Length: 224
Image (cartoon, rainbow, N blue to C red):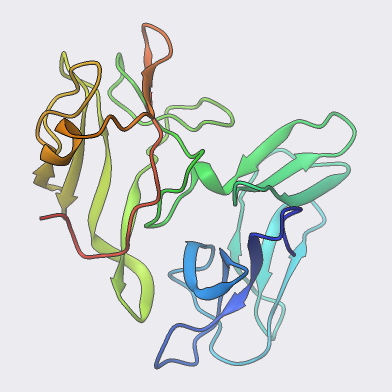
């Protein structure tokens, strides 16, 4: 499956030095640049397997025995489900008749943030916000375990808006590893590069929800 602008592709891939297979989204011109992985903790071990829409409308990854190894896990059944990869690289599962989006990959990111993606946090509950259904679920970027294994690694990154001034934070197994410094309305004060070039993308959309959307972030074990 390819986006209308031919920039992003949904398909199976194998990281370097392994035969494990994963469903992911990557750039059409560079399949090695993976921006999202579905079954990151449950790889397919051989060339069998498929991606399909289940009877209840969920998008699923099946192994060679038709066992579900990954699912969008919607609790509401869809009558006429449609899957589409948008020009932004966002994979969306929607109800065809109403057009309502019920699941999107941007709300379940792996380790890469691309333009158009939003990290949001409810400043009252302190929890990250699912941008589709606006439920208080945790939405974080999570590093790969290694360069050849997309399983969940030690480092996570997200928005901390619980204090008076929002900031970006990277955690190492739950312990703060790096902070961007507070947002002063124009820049994150702890990122010296932002003193020289204004990087747009951060906004407070109302009194309860704060969002940040930035450029693509590289793969790595942390920020230094």
